[in-house]
Length: 233
Image (cartoon, one colour):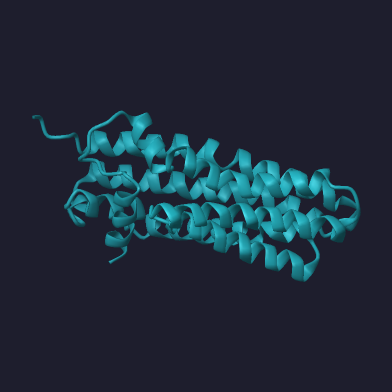
């Protein structure tokens, strides 16, 4: 069931090893193209810029910064609904932005806008790491479903090793984000360091987002294609 869910999500994103196309094109498609990149980047970027550039104290800047961020996510969702394109990514971004904004408004600490991201990284990283060490790496489960192999890859030492290390690599990505960003969040509990912490957290979220995600996705795709080469025409 887990493999089917992961594989289905990967297939909807365009990550089907059976399809033809260059690695760059497949990775770009999986990220949603320009629209997907903008949906991923703009809400956080506008929050950082608005909060940093506006004059005033924390509470005076927090509400407009959050309003702009959630507003951008809402616009992306509305556009997808109007165009009748799959809205799941945009809706997910809108819900995440709304939850993060609500948390920051309740506490009055703009850095709390990043807490949902910390939780997501911790959950994803833990699930990937545990799955690898119990012998059922999530990358293998997803690929097994995609190629119609089920769990038979577990009898192939080469595939089992490849999926183990790919899963560890993805777990390391989520762990690295948490290890770098969470200590900075803790500094924001000191109000005198809050503004600088928000700016740094926002910058790191962007830098450790797509710029790290895309290369790892490309490596994963290349390894899977090597394990399951397309059938000759």
